[in-house]
Image 1 (spheres, rainbow, N blue to C red):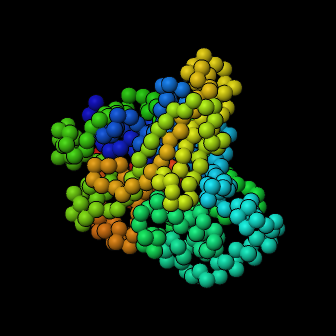
Image 2 (image 1 turned 180 degrees about the vertical axis):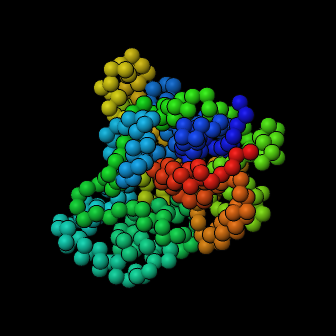
Image 3 (image 1 turned 30 degrees about the vertical axis):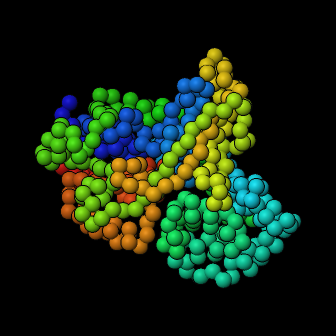
Length: 394
C-alpha cells in the first residue's frame, strides 16, 4: 500500500486522525510508532500473574463534557460507570481529594457549614494576588495558605522539582474546590473506563478502517530508511512527537517531567482500599500509589472472568508506586513544565512549524500541552475538519 498520509505516533491524536482520514476521506494511512504497542501513554495491559488490567504509564481516566467527543468515542468502545475518587495521606492521616467540605472539616477539626467554610477559606486566601502569576499564587487563591501548604506545596515539589514560582498557574486551575461532600475528582458530564480495556478500544478504531491503515511499530521517524524516503518525497505528515526534537533542538530543549514506575504484586486482596492514594508530604519519595484492581471492580462479578487469572488470583493485588523525575533525552516525556523560558522556546518552534506546510504538529508532545484524553481527541477532530478540504496529497 502506498500511503497518502504518514502519521507519527499511535496515541489518541494519531489514531483519531487516522480513523477520520481513512473512513471519511478514503485515504491510505501509514502510522508509525517507536514503541511496541499502539495507544501511546494511554496503553494498558493485563498483568500475566493476576489478570488485573494495569495502565502502563500511570492512571488514565476518561472523562468529558464534550458531547461531540463522547459520541465519537462510543463508536469504538462502551464505558463502565467508574467514578474516579482520590485520597491523600498527609501527616499519617488520610483525606479526600480534591479539597471539599469533608477535607476542610477534617483538616481544621471542625463542622463548618458550606457558607462557613467559604468564609474560612476566603479569609485564608485574602493575601493572594487577584491575578495569579504562578502556581503558588493560584493555589493560595483557591484554597488558602494552610490547605495549600498541606496538600499542594510538598506534593508539587516532588512532582515538578521546579520552583513553584516558575510554574504556570494553569497547572492547578484544573482541580475543583467544592463546598459540599462531593469527592468526585472530575466535574464532567461523562466519565468511565473502556469496558474491555484501552487496547481493545484502540484496536477497534483501527479495525474500523479496514485495510486503509497500516501500523508499523518499533519504527523511529528519524532513523528508519523507509520513512526517510517518504520524508524526502514530501509526504503529508501528522507528527505527534516532541516538537523540539523534530527541529533537532535548534532553540534548546523544552522542559518535561518524566516518571518512573515501581510495580509490585502483593499477596493481599486489597492494599489501600482505593484506586489512587496521593502522598502529599516530602516523604515518601513517590507521589502516589495506584491499585489497579479498584479501576474495574465490576469484573469481580463478570462471568467472562470466572475461569481466568483474575478470579484465580483474587487474593492478590497489583500496586504501582509512581515517582517523578527530571526528564533527559532518551527518556519518556510526560508533563510539560511550561516555564516562561519554555513558552519563549515554544513560540520559536511554532514559527518554524508554520513554515512546514506539509506537516501538522499535534498531540501532547507536538503541541507541548498537558491535555486530558478528551481534549486530545477534540483537538484532532477539529484539526481534521480544518484539513480535510484544504490539504493536497502527494
